[in-house]
Length: 335
Image 1 (cartoon, one colour):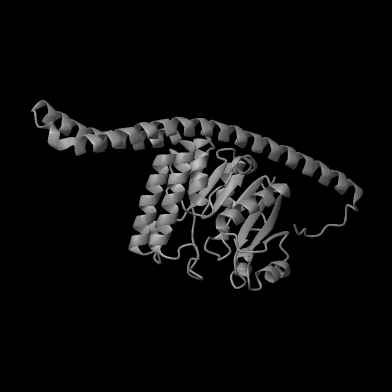
Image 2 (cartoon, rainbow, N blue to C red):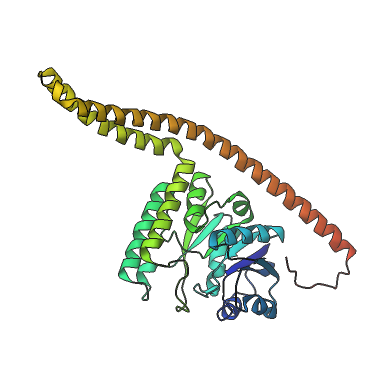
């Protein structure tokens, strides 16, 4: 079984050496461990440091594409080099590499396809009280929407089986963490969490520019993902809300109309009618969005099959090339 540890990096020349050094060299149940670096348009010596460290595979974005797109590129790269299990960790050495065996063990045992490292944020001393509260509240919302128990939904320390990586389709431009959890819940991908340790802070988070900015981006991701997988339910709530708002002034108008004073309350009739009409349109939009959702599911199924075909063809090609090469020659591969 082959494990590939992917490390998305953006200007991590100072912390990358320790991150790589902390990755275990051997793990029970794993025959081969490789490291894949995704350089997200770094302007420092991250790329040179990765080469000096002798990592097995290097991917590079010519410009900074953001964490979500970089993570997705890493998954595709890991699958392309034959990974059976993929572990994602951060280049700032936030997560303890010694806990990687704990992440991959449930996948080796066949108990899960995705394993998320629970940082136990309530016990982390350098997390502020507001950050701990937001993490607890946000993870609670994600658990409710995904239908999966995840104590630390935004933890980037996680492991994927080959099957889960093939079925994961990242569309968010901001962060992949919440999206993968909601996708796992809606696609019935088995997911569990395990407690992990964290290292001392090496730098400020680049993803969290400010608490309001972070909340806004995460809320937009949650709404987008939930609407993508449950469009009928979302538009039903919207339509029902508008309809109830519309009924209030209509009932008010009817009351005055029955009592003979309806002439002075035409505004209530107009307002109520408009809200009811918008509610009806929302119901229709929900039906259309639900049909579109079915088409999206068909497209995702097609994408999964194409990925499997491409991976099978790539592995067949590598095997044929490997038979022609000298068995004693082997060197790191740059992608």
